[in-house]
Length: 87
Image (spheres, rainbow, N blue to C red):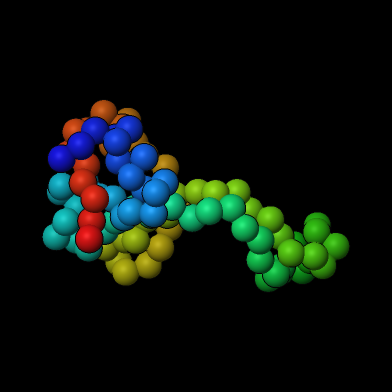
């Protein structure tokens, strides 16, 4: 088990991380580096002149519903000491 700061360092190195209680739900957090993608909507085509849309690095959560969401830790997550690297 590790503290949140240690877990963040691990995820930035390419590891998947999770809280101990998440294990049975197949949930984990992973790091998505900054990149760009083709605009998928007319709004983004107009906003970026048809060019690729740059996005910033972020943390993503593989959810119990078997999809992916952007993730921001709660205060409880930040203060927890039950983080682990998931294989």
